[in-house]
Image 1 (cartoon, rainbow, N blue to C red):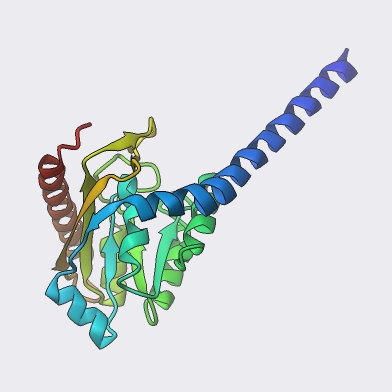
Image 2: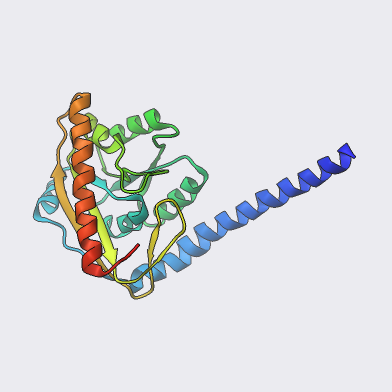
Length: 236
């Protein structure tokens, strides 16, 4: 009996691995390689970078871009205006899919998060900041949604780079049943971006200053996101 149970368990594990590989392959090559580029080309995008951010770009200075986790697709459009960009992506299973997809759009990645590989990721971000803009989702990888963790303010303090907060909304979208209620605009949706800032955290700031920076980033990002969702009629 033990041999039979072991055989059944092995078959289940085998099927589970192949099912996961098939899902990953579809996400990377079909969705990321075919569907998403077509969706992006169909969206009607309104994006106007603020003067301050254009000045940073044109002078070769670098910034940190803060996106809420459920709107990280917005990075694909903003990265067209600010290059090169490296985004912080978790080491969880779905992180590899995201890293592979964004690489198709010319965006680099640093792997790590507040729950796994955080210290190593911070070191990599500091190193990457010497030659690249950085992008961070302050409420990732597991939430709570719209609550910033200290990572973005900490990286700002270590690098001396200012933080621009970026958000967008749309007039029609699919909402996923994930912890962040991930937003995917539908074909031919109208998208409106807002990029504001900058929030600066003094280089080598102490813990109190970093916490103040975190709270300021969270407050401003939420105020801007709420206002923009109201403008576009996005609910949920």
